[in-house]
Image 1: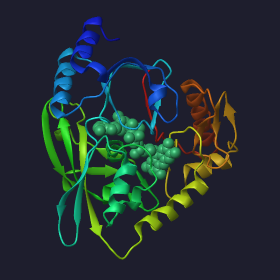
Image 2: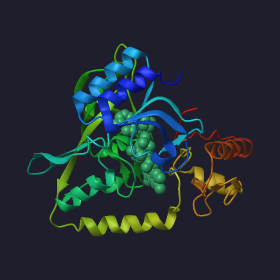
Image 3: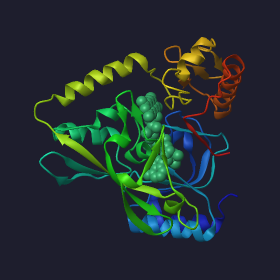
Length: 315
Ligand SMILES: Cc1cc2nc3c(=O)[nH]c(=O)nc-3n(C[C@H](O)[C@H](O)[C@H](O)COP(=O)(O)OP(=O)(O)OC[C@H]3O[C@@H](n4cnc5c(N)ncnc54)[C@H](O)[C@@H]3O)c2cc1C
């Protein structure tokens, strides 16, 4: 169901320059594919966000929270309803609490993960290396339990601030959160009576003060290793989850002969077979067809059912 004229008018009235209509999602995703979202709204603060959520809930309109769009594949006809971006009003980073053996840093969901890593280095705080080099926002990283061979974001998280739809803000300590491989699992209790997944407003990160370690050099080394293995070009990172640590999806796809294979402008990377690269003008349909071919072949040859790591949204 597309947005009615009345809803568009109301959003334009409430959010002014921070509401965009028929916004091409290709402009907001690292894959650079995806049709238009009916509306893209950037609330400036929590009261504004609550206002928006009340309105959407009452009108029965669907929404999607957008982080940096680095793990999203938006289909070609785009997104019906409202895409919510927290990039403008929720990007503060500040020290929350200092103890002799740990420092807790708060970062808004819309802050760049790279900005949080930089803040940690500048303040001589160790721990963020587990996610160094991962693109996207703090909110997206928490939702995806983003990680590297060094660990995942769950290992440095002390808690998160959430908005339970439409208007309850709560802090959830780390002990209340359940993480799985590349995802945060919301409990039924957190989703409340209406069943909506909460929005992450920010996270608190427990880091270790250090004067001895050269954190910048450590991260630089990790980044250099990343660039050796990770293709440049338009992508959303690893397309499929690894079936297990011993059986990385990239190896299976490589062994099945897909490196370099392309459909239209969507190509399996020559460097890392679990990356699909948009060579220039790939459509979401090209990428989805390539993913379907890979899944079918791997199932037939290895009896393994690859699961997407990227989130596929829209119509
Ligand atoms: C080149 C490249 C390399 C990558 N390398 C890695 C890697 O090493 N490790 C890794 O784990 N990932 C990697 N990724 C994938 C991606 O960067 C991570 O998953 C990242 O954490 C996603 O963050 P984002 O802000 O872009 O989220 P998005 O892609 O915008 O969103 C991801 C999901 O989170 C939801 N979401 C986002 N913000 C919020 C919020 N505030 N509240 C509620 N829901 C929200 C969205 O609705 C969506 O379902 C890579 C991607 C690229 C392009």
